[in-house]
Length: 340
Image: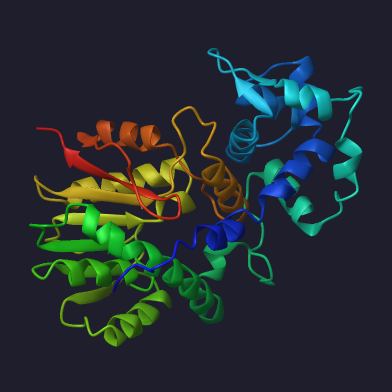
C-alpha cells in the first residue's frame, strides 16, 4: 500500500465539513447564541442552562464558533461574543446578518442539529431510514458495507504514512481495535515484515474485514476476531493497541473505558497508538477539526478531543503521551507508553 501522489485534502475536507453550516445556522437563528454571549458571557454550563441545551453538543458548537473567530473564551472559562459577532450576529447590530441565515433555517440538517443540541443524542445518519443513529446503523449489512467502504478509502490515504511514522519497528503483534476493513492493519504488516496484526470488529464488519484482508493477500499475517470492544474480552498477547478513528465516536466516559481496557490487557512494555484528528488544547481550532467535530457530534455519541484531554486520561492510567505527530488530511497520532 502506498500513499497517493496528490494531496486530496480539499476533497476530503468538504465531506468532513458538511454539518458545520447547519450548526452555525442553528446557533444564529434558533438559539441567538451571540446575543446571549454579548449580554451574558457564560461558560459551557451557563450556555446550556440559558438555552436548554446539552453539554456535549454545546461544547462542540462553541469550539466551532471559536475556531471561526465568533466567540472567545477568557481565562475564567467564560465565552464572549467577539467584535466580528457583535457587528453581524447580535440583536440590534447595524449590520445584523441574522436574517441572511434565517432564510435557510428550515433546512433538515439545521433541524437535526437543533435536536442534537436539545437532547444530547445523535440524529439519524443522513439518508438512513428507521435507524436510531450511526451506532445502530452499523449493525445492518447494507449500511455497514457503505460506511466501511467510506472509511477504507480514507484509510488508503492515511494508513501507509501512519504505519511508517508511528514506531512499529520491533513490535510483534498489533491489535487494531474497531479496525473496520483492516486497512490500517494491512498497511502496518506490509511496512513491517515481522509484525502480525489482529482486527477486532463486530458483525457484520468482521466479514467485510476478512474479504479485504484476503484481497490484499495478508491473510497469513492479519486475522479477525469477532467481538464487542466494550463487552467482550480482547485478544491477549498483543504489544501494541491501535485506536484509529475510534475514540471520536464515543463520549468521554466510554473513551476512558476503552483506554482502561487497553491498559489492563497490554504487557508492561505495551503501547497504545491513538490515530485521529485532534483539537488544540485551547479548543479554538484547528478549523477543519472543529468543523469535523460538528459532523461527529451530530451522528455519533462522540466528538473530537484535544490531544491534552487524551494525555490526561493516559496519565490517570500510568501512561505518558507523546506530542501529536502530523499526518495527511489534518490527522495525526499520539503514542501512549507506560511511565517508567
